[in-house]
Image (cartoon, rainbow, N blue to C red):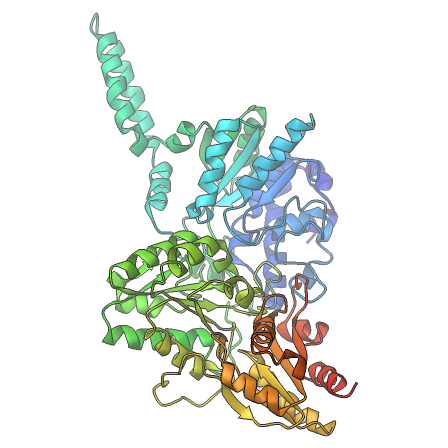
Length: 624
């Protein structure tokens, strides 16, 4: 690390001999691989942009110039070059560096990211602010071809072409996002990569026609009209040019000199420029190059082989969902499955393999996914939409207006509900219950274990209306396989322990915690009961009234924001029943803040939502 040890900020990079930049790139790759092998993180995407990042920082002056990283899972080299090299081994650890750009972490992180397709909008906003304030700095947005499938990126491009603000959009084209890219846009980028043939033919035709006496000019004008009718299919960057943006490229994204050249050229334009850069995801580390999807987001691994740690573990919630949806689809040809660029992460890869004609990966387009499902439901199909809870927030209007308002039978499988750990605030499913509970017609489930999840999926497909199932990331609790995951009664909770002094109403992942808490409360002389709510909506009104009548204290427990969550629903129900003043209540869940990154255990402990802390808090409540 002879060179890297000398780079503490971008100014040192500018002073380095240009001939040494490839060596620096190799050292950065080695450093990233060594660190991520210990901490886990986004590996393949970061290895693909090392040279690209070096070129950007060689040309632009951070933090005066602004670089916005779309999604942000490719920002590791940027962090290393901007004074965070020494802290890099704390990546994604509790109290350490975030895996994504964060304005609170460094002035060099111009915009906090974590979700896709936002960079061009943010860059355009900064460019507009710069001009209004009569300031002088450059703005660059780095966006992958996968993120380009998000409609927000095109909304921003359209507006950028109209406003004509000086800015750079770097299209990092590695031919894939997390999964293989899909759709017409992917095909367009392919044509852009191979458009040199058209340019050569066009030059040759022009030369021949101009050489013909008298009629050559007229034929050339006719040929121009013909060429204009087909150029959208052949000319690289024609889409961007028509939107009012200059296009440069494509260029080899691992040739630092070439990229420095085109970025310097882009700085000379006084209007928006798109620089098309071709990169290889996982570049420089063979296991990541061969298995870019597996190394997109990875846990610790052995550098020598790329092998990851394997442990005996329970079936994950995602695997349980995958199994049951496949079983149901074998019996019901109306069932279709939709995901937004996450077939592996949501457990739909097996479904796609068995039923390719009924599987739809729409790319990073959650809004479209939800409304497409609504259209299917209108025509008698039974679609399931599998999305991470945090990304479902992007389709809030479609969930309410296109599905709930029309009371359509769409099943939503929302993976990664609650705290997800190392990815932090942008990826926690902290608002799962709160953002959807107010929507009429929607039934909301949350399972206590992987078997109950399967029962909920089966039940959801019997309901002639919208349903949402929120379940956590990672292994289940190791519950023995149930008998065919029987159907549940809608709105019926499960009483697990009867109590005399207090009753805990828990939902989802917190039910297992609550069972342990009840045991600890007995040490305080408190006989506590436990109810597995199963449903956030509708609630079990009868059991709620019964338990409120039999105990002095009631506690709600959820891995969701307290504001507007499950606890709020219980309090509203008690008030509506006229019994809220007859029992003392305590709502426990995520506080009114954005939870940072770190292991889930560390986060729960810091929030006093681990078993020991919860037992102490509940005991103090019951014994004031």
